[in-house]
Length: 122
Image 1 (cartoon, rainbow, N blue to C red):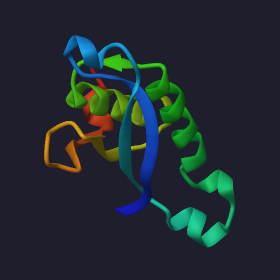
Image 2: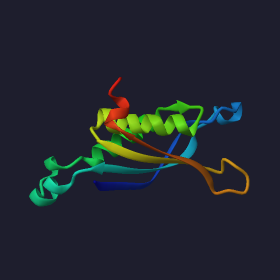
Image 3: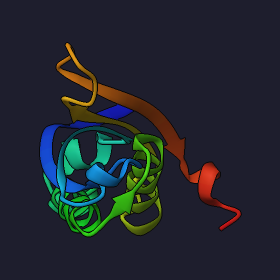
Image 4: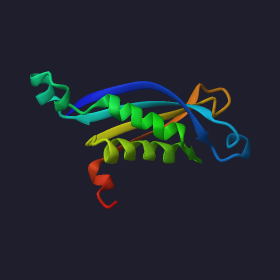
């Protein structure tokens, strides 16, 4: 499967379960790998023949900046849902990092993978 990679998307949202984490938006860094078939678009050179990663990126930005989650896991799952259900990505790997979440570390992060099959019961 081919891949479209979006790296280092830096956004702010409410993330965390401690009261001080819930007061103001915090930084998160998002990496996404969208697995899709790029053969047709690669041959045709027609943007209509590819997964529109600009549309996916804009939808993720809107979603994350308006979101409020206790855990990185829930935020990552919601990002996957937006990409797959709303934007039509067949398969996504999402990494969400929270800079400065633990002392003496650059960041803490989670990585998940989801496909259309994960959301078919919805």
